[in-house]
Image 1 (cartoon, one colour):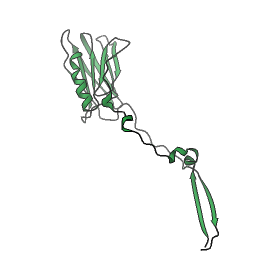
Image 2 (tube, helix red, strand yellow; image 1 turned 90 degrees about the vertical axis):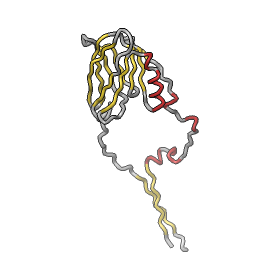
Image 3 (cartoon, one colour; image 1 turned 120 degrees about the vertical axis):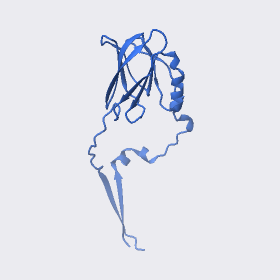
Image 4 (cartoon, rainbow, N blue to C red; image 1 turned 60 degrees about the vertical axis):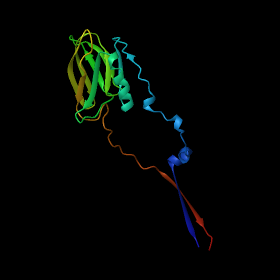
Length: 179
């Protein structure tokens, strides 16, 4: 009986033998966001000390516990109630001069601003929102909640692109065994 054996090799498999191997990642090597220490940062241009975060329950608890160390709290969400991260926040003074700008690492931004009247603008890929903020000489400002339009924050949805099929190499072997 004659049989035909057809072998197909894709370019990816030929050029990368790693595709056929299996790797095991030990649990100790898996990075967890809860392992992050919330460290204050200082804006180099203005000298404003700030802290940003609040991704996940544990980090929300940590950042809320540090609120008393700052005179300003800004929270960011969208019109559907989703917390936002990666939002650009700009604080400008009464003369329109930028006092502080940062891109958030979570839905909360804590800042130690000088006393005064400010305009706070938050911007993401779906739009922006502005509000007035009054920081008192003593104590804390009222929490500023900015609700931005619903949409994809800080990036545009990728457009589908055409990917041509991967060329295959075919090998045909004939077997003349009569069974």
